[in-house]
Each structure stands twice: as C-alpha cells, then as structure tokens.
Image (cartoon, rainbow, N blue to C red; front, side):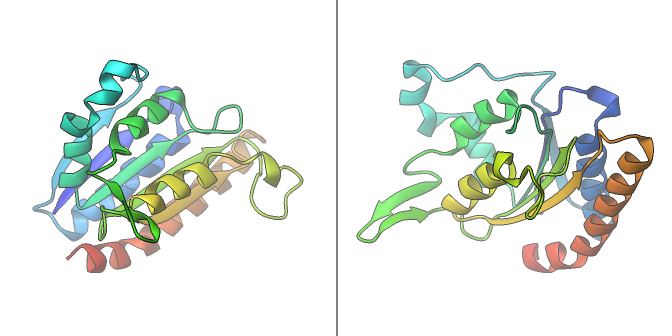
Length: 193
C-alpha cells in the first residue's frame, strides 16, 4: 500500500492539522507496517502558482503521477481566511488534470481516481460546522470535498475546530480529532486492502 502524506499548515510545529495528519499516518503504518509513505511539506517546498505553460503540461507532471500512484492520500490543511492554504491550492491545481484524474462522458464529468482514499485533517480556529453562525464562511472543507469527489476519490474529513478559542478548547478539539482518526483506522485499511 502507498500513502502520500501532505502538510500545508504555515504554523509549523504548533500546527494542529500537522499533528492530526501525522497521527493518521502513524495509525495506518501501525495497521500495515510494510506501507510505503511519501511525505511532502508544501510550505517548506512550495509549488509555484500555475502559469499557462505549466497548465499546458499538467498531464506530464510528477504531482499528478504521485497522486495517482498513492492508494491513500492524507492531507493536513489549515484554515486561513475561510479557505485552504494557497500552498495546498497550488498542489490541487496540479492533480486536477483532465484525462488523468477526470474526464467527460455523455452524462458529464467522470472521476478517474476511483478507489483512492483521501483523508483530510482540517484545523479551524473558530467553529464553522453546520449550525454554527459562521457555517456560511466555511470554504475549505467544501472545496476539498468537491475537488476529491470530482476526481472520483472517497473522501473522509476529520475536523478540529475552535482551536483558537483558548488552550482548553484547542486540547478538546485536537483530542476529539485524534479519537476520530483512531476509529477511521479499520475502515481505511479494509478499503485499501
């Protein structure tokens, strides 16, 4: 089994999404020790934004190939200004490639990354979940679910929210996300096997 692990939070060692994504990968590794893991820090090694030249050559890019070769993709994502980090958006621009990860059929778009599992560890400073006063401002989870569903992947999102509301709230949110990740383990391994 191959895992592609990406982190995109700009807060480094203090990042909740990085801690959660690392815990997810460790649990997956514990369940299947012979797993092949590729790690990329999109902040330490950012991809440039798209240009017309890079857009024209996306189908030959190493990013889309790496995505397609992975059985499971684990993404740590921060939540900045109501959306995802721009570093993660630059990577997504390189894996949403017509003819590689999606195509068009008689009835519209067709995802070509069927059977791939994408697990997203999303950390939000405030509470943006359904029913909160700020739910309409949440554009990270919705964007990530849309993109990866569009390419045909199975998407699971683990959210730690309210982490900016003080140390106690942060600890409760991260602990809850880690507990959710531990329940995800069996289903993920069963799906990927």
